Picture (cartoon, rainbow, N blue to C red):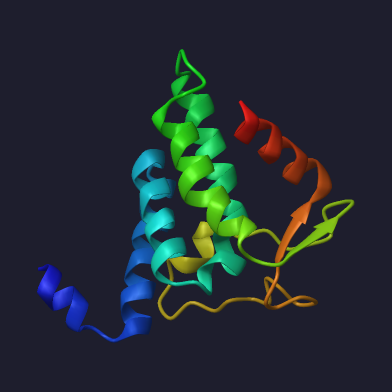
Length: 142
């Protein structure tokens, strides 16, 4: 199965992973969705702009749903080491309020899907809200 997947065109591989991540998230399998988003972020650098913020928020939500005892847990590790590290390697535009369009996994379930100008003003930058970035950095510090 893996050999077949690797022989698919680059864009098709990305679309399959994106669709699968959205399906897992919508069906409530948050950890599986998080891991698929991490795979997307690491394998396809352009996806960080489109869904990096969403992946970070999903990892935080996943940790909140599972109520781990320690701050050192698999959810925090996934957030800090796998998602936040990818986000921080990109150019980030920090906004005061939510004036940016938010990634919605429902948009990626129809084929063919259309990316509806998620990043109109800054197409190669990750757009975050100041309070969001601050909370991420606080979580990363423990």
